[in-house]
Image 1 (cartoon, rainbow, N blue to C red):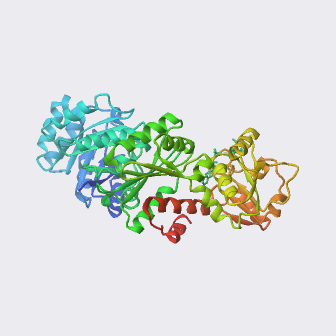
Image 2: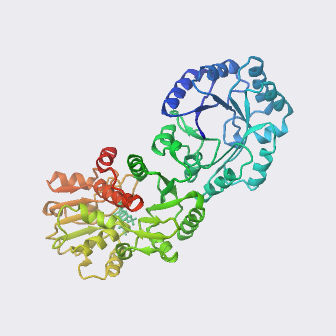
Length: 514
Ligand code: NAP
């Protein structure tokens, strides 16, 4: 069973107390072993005594690591300085369970090898290599070389992932390992190597203690153990990812993973950044699907890839729901056991379902003409509503009207603004981290404020924050408001059902995002 290692950075021997207290929290959260990162310690006064306290007072075994600058740490001294520290530790009988030594140093420094040997058999050697820039050119040779070193109890190879494809290569390293191995990718795109490390046969997975990550892309111990259920994942676990750029802000992983856990469903859901552009989308999804061991069973697609997802499924000969065709955008892909694809758009029915009034006979002003607008308009027109589009860039609004090709969908006219039952915002105005977080789309589009008062419902698609300037303005004049989290939950419920065949725990989802 793979271990969960909490990596804790200890700046100096004077920080031992706070490091030990961090280790207690990490163990409570589920860590099996603590990596003490003491990069700056060799040569410092009191270093050996302080290591003894860390190793002896921690409630779980320790890994001692001095990471050099060239491999992503802070140590800029020589191998001799590390050797001297190890010599003192050996002579005082301080034996961490493992010591991590970098392979280039190990190979070059006889004193380092001698000092490690003198520590005795209770301290295992983790021989490591790190590349902070990207996949090492000599990846397979480096792994074979480290594996052939008899003294190494465990080998570790880590590099910065440039895309999700790197993770699959790390899994190949694990699947063909000659001895206990850690293979992981740093950065956001490397998350699968941390979450799925156990089921892929890794010796351990590193996670961050309460003091924060010690390497890019580390999630916390609590996230690894509780959100991603690290210890429960196995060869049968179905994998789901949300693909987008950016993607780290998404609440889908929190919601879907809690749904899987609640339903006892053997699945895991991870965020994966995919750089903009058709080529990167196609390459990433292609690689994830081609690896049968990865067991990709579904994708949630967000900006800027919803149209790429439609094209991908079409080119792969998969089936596409009518509403996704009509919207020209896919936010959900289902992968069957044989690798067959089907695609849907759950945003469209989610908006119809949560609109707050019956679409037939309703007049709706849709603000925006991007991906969310396409889904909204496709769903509302299909449900019998009359929709007018208002957008900052008129050509985009025109293109949407033409794409819908339906007399119930027309361009909004600034001279005829009365009679709207619903004002539906699909622009990203008001979104945290968006183009205009403080903005109100009504004002941005030059529409009059009284439209909010006249409408029966103001529907906001933006869900972060829940109370956008538009929501506040609508509430101030007493109009009923549907907030973006209602749409989010309704579309997420449909995704959950499409992937698992089950109903999600809707009430606990509500509380989760409250
Ligand atoms: P998108 O395709 O990028 O479209 C953005 C829209 O916002 C475009 O119409 C754009 O107008 C308009 N816009 C951006 N900045 C503006 C400004 N300063 N003034 C006026 N208009 C501006 O994005 P999307 O995928 O449709 O997503 C839009 C929003 O919906 C996001 O906040 C997203 O998080 C949210 N959303 C929520 C859910 C949910 O489940 N609640 C689901 C999907 C999307 P131009 O055409 O002129 O650029």
